[in-house]
Length: 492
Image (cartoon, rainbow, N blue to C red; front, side, top):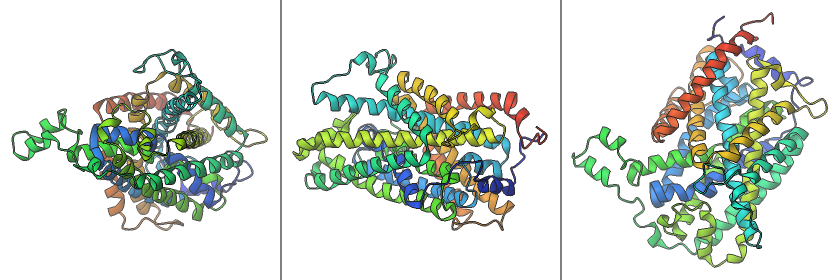
């Protein structure tokens, strides 16, 4: 039994065409774009933009967004080629199985738990804070003991609203993909409208003084350029990542969380009506739309309020919007942000269940995870399990710890997908591709380099947690998955 054995492309395509036993094909190209936008615009934009500006990049957080978007663009091209070529649920897990073998596929599938499950938990924590702020406008206050986990900066007992929304969305996903997509489309329209309104109304109130200096000075970079500090000492010092160009790099790693989601579109490939055309449109279309909105949004946000004042502010959008004088729109703004967070959680939870569905079909996880509902044809048992798993993280783990773990897990997945395109061009050069990445291997290599640089900019704690998570995953693979793999044990 070889842990490097790849899953033949012909087998994957047969699975994709087995519509009677598999998932329902109900998603149009428009729904896929909405799915991507639904997953992308959320906590990263509405919360992390202010944090990254205050602690890392200052007004140059707009450059951080552009750098993160460039990294996503190269990875997005690779995802688009794979999704049009292998229209099967599972995203990067499935692509790795076809190119780099079962062990790498398992590692990436396990890594995607980190991205989707903890991503949903992260957003649920922020969602609960905005709900509390909205209710507070009407004199209703959620007790702090059930609004914060025991290890938060303001400790409580449990984040009950976060648990509640995860349970509600999990039940919706069990009902069916078509119904979930309809709700998601409505939520996407709501939050895109509020982003555009924020940009349009806020633009006229920008104070140019708040953009000066555009790139705040980093004293360590000055010492580095004068030869008074070595690069190694600078990289390991407190100077690194706090303003200057290193702050833009660290900021890109932080706001990268804001782009997580376009890859979730690829998990729905087996539910797309015309995956060869729809998947590239869904992945790249949602990424382009969100990048434009992000850069404009960050520019207006840092122009309305001095970046220093966003430090420790969990809701920088309402803080900045207060400068416009349109305070009567604050409630509408908060409602739209809550709607935006809700759609992100919906797509993340859907993506995770589809990854585990694919891993279970391959025998790497118990059959429990690929059991479909008799009527709705959704992996309802997986939805229920992750409802419990994600709820526990959302109810007890601090949001900052969750966010960094999600970012590093996603960057790792992007790196492997970029490498996978190069491998697949060599191993299956004649396979039908609805979309092709231009300039291979150059573009995938650039994608790999950018993702690794962004990973290097994240705190060391993120690397330590990733290592622990991966060690646990490797242990599960060798104790269970390798023995039950259908590819390596065809008789089972």
